[in-house]
Image (tube, rainbow, N blue to C red; front, side, top):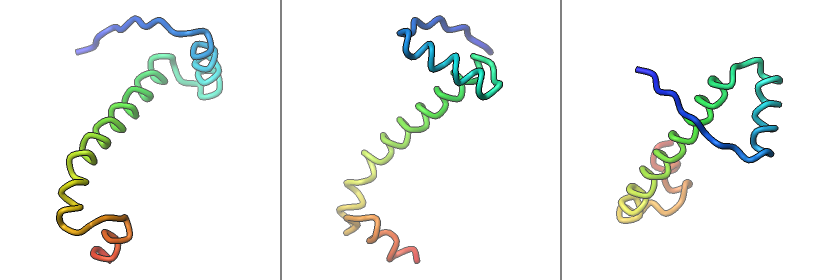
Length: 72
């Protein structure tokens, strides 16, 4: 199923979008879809991290180096 979304953009974002479309050769829809996919992935990662960091700390993992030492 496809949904059409109408979005109002400030001029600076619109100009950046137009430049990106021209540079990439992609359609406006493709560029916006890719940007939304990335943002959704970032938000999912942040949510997951927010839930897992306290558990990691409880297990004694305080830094990336702590994790690396265990998995290396």
